[in-house]
Image (cartoon, rainbow, N blue to C red; front, side):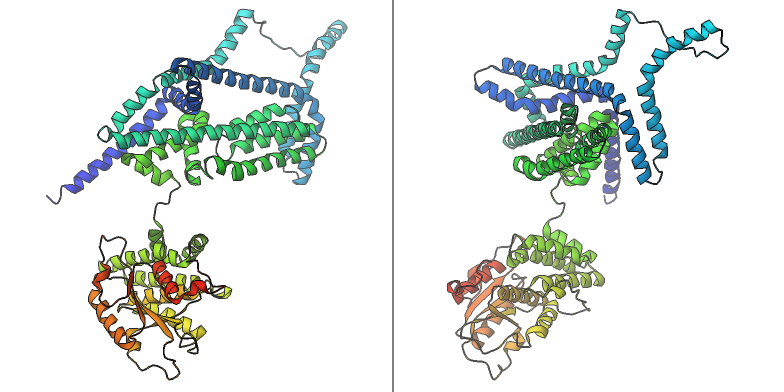
Length: 637
């Protein structure tokens, strides 16, 4: 029986590998079929909001679909016509700028110490070919006749030309060259029409296949995913159109020829992640350098693209669909490489939409959850897991840098409650299971101590990243306390203070409790509360002679394993009550968030108040000390 899971696991792995290979083969060999269908589905998500608007004004489903598809077709045809006309014009005007191109290449050749010599020769031959083509044709017929009449022995160049094509042959040749893209476009629009007409039926079938047993959850997931994708595609389309229009207007003002072409290219190429808009910028800048004798037009063209892209990427896009697409930057690059390998240039343009569809599907369907983890922007590890993993690796600096980013939004108490304490419980669980070695314990202890030292009590700038060296069997809380006492004194402050202003932090007994008590004291001192860390053993000693009676307002007994330490907590409370009978008694129970345990506040006899987080403990201390009424005191926790 014990040997069965291993063969079954190997069988599942083999099945997974074969399934992945089959999917890749289908994507590659079936691209002629899958590309039109994918384009149709993405276009349907793009124009679905337009169809909904048409239906709201009273048009039926069929008429709305027809109007939307015709509008889309006319728009794409107009864009294609504009681009084609502009490209033909550029091709016809390039020979006019032959001298400018030669001079620019010579300048660049001099600046790069002759490294562009080969490029200069190639560019010169290409330009000569363009500029002298008409002259060669004209002189061929004029120069050949005198040579023949004079009976010269000079060789006569002979060119063999095909006979001029008949109109029918010319039309056939043109049709054969444009038939493939027209065929693909036709298939896309036919599939698009049927997808839009049967939108509701297709959605119902998908819901039945995806999760017919839980109809409500599947319906919500499908609707939400469709709305998210449609909103993203519409927003991205609008942003790209805005970029193209601004590029067109800006280049027109600068005086660059064919500005409309570069605006259209910027809008289209911007669908290619990261590099698309810069391809258009490079081509436009190259043309500006070719047609202008100086370099000012080229520099202004490049700066125009830079300014427009920065404004849209940093200001406009975050307002429309967030700062990013929800994909990690690395996944966007890998997706572009993968889809361009599978489907060529079309895959490169569709890489981001396709990957986004996979991530959204992985968010709602468990079978596809790996796509959200691998490709999504959501962190694969929670913040406590990330802290513990970095601590095991000894990456203290990275933990501190991450913590400082969190502290820009949260307080130190909230950070300890949500990140540091759960990470401590993760380490405690591995320690109890003997799954962590001595060396790893020292790494974790060093990381925890260094982070607390760097973040707690506003240290000086030269001590913010001091690494603490931990020795075996050293109590972290006591070592942090000694380091703090080395700065402010062995008594952690003067005893010449007003009555009722000191709060004592006391661990219930374990080393983890003392660490939590030290953390609490540092949080209190960041709030200008005179917190002091003492142990139960020290409370049994005689007080220093210069201690005034009544200076202690309250004490907080801290436990990070309250279920196991109930008896110790009650015994410590009894000891503290005998020692400080007129002091407010607070108990801080920090249970593990990974354990489903119910803590009863009234289970602790003698405690005036029981809290379960550092934030609640600090709020209770501030409330009992009445510090909210003191001007200039920080009360934000």
